[in-house]
Structures are given as structure tokens and as C-alpha cells.
Length: 157
Image 1 (cartoon, rainbow, N blue to C red):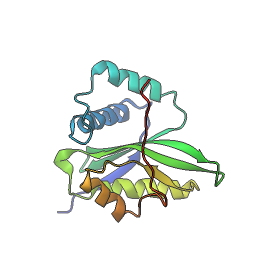
Image 2 (spheres, helix red, strand yellow):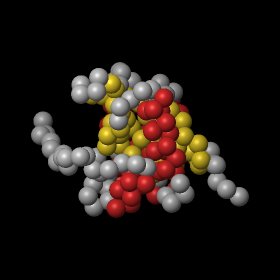
Image 3 (cartoon, rainbow, N blue to C red):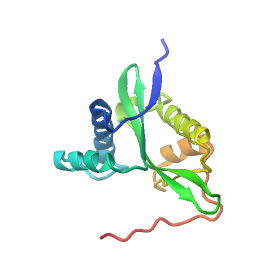
Image 4 (cartoon, rainbow, N blue to C red):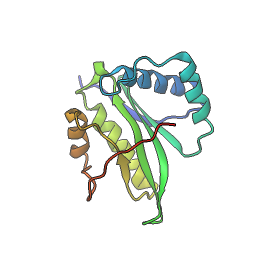
């Protein structure tokens, strides 16, 4: 029997969706590719509180046979070069117990379809160099390094 994968656009106001996103984020943070450790209750409630007022926030939840199995936290930005919105994937992960079942591809297809339907010019993301599984998924779904590869820099405040 083929497993049923469903991807939905989440609603942060809906407690079940918010909790599912937080559970997936917690798994991602504890994964070696997230590398942050367990999500604290305090941080979890702050995340939801702040995302509820973040007007450019959008998230996707993947389910397999009715169980939440993956997610993508995204933010809508704007390309001044193309005068169109773009979608940045900030977090993207599939629960370890559900990997290699097509969930990542289903999530990515939903994000691409959403972006096309909303006339966005591109989808951006960052990926760790030491994460060949994610890089393979992204390549399979039409992503490539920027025409001029860029470094991701930060300044902690």
C-alpha cells in the first residue's frame, strides 16, 4: 500500500498547526544539521507569539498517513531587480523517522506550486555544504547555486 503524503499551508493562528510546526522545528533543531539542541518551552511560545504578527511569514506542513512528518518555514521578500515577491525558505526539514519516503519532494513541490500561483519571481534558500542529502533534494527540484555563488554572512547582535 502506497503511503499518502499531503502538504498543507499552515495557519499559525490554528493551535494544531502551530504545535505541529514547533514539533517539527524541535526535531530539526536536535538533528545534527540543525545543531541547536532541544527547543525550550519558553522559546517555543515566543516563536509562535512573534510569528503571529510577522505578516510575511508562511509555512508548510507535510503529513504522511495523517501524521506530521516535515515542514518548511518561509518568509516572503521582494526583488527590487524584478519588482516581484520572492519566497525564502528559512527552515526545511523532514522528521528522521519519515525520511526517504518522498516527503521532501512533496514539500518542495507544494512550495514551488505556491510560488508560481502567486507570481513570485524565485525561491531562495541556504543549505549547509556538509548536507549532501538536502543538496541532492534541492538539485532534484531545480535549485542550483546562484549564478555568482554567494557567502552567507552574519553579525550576531
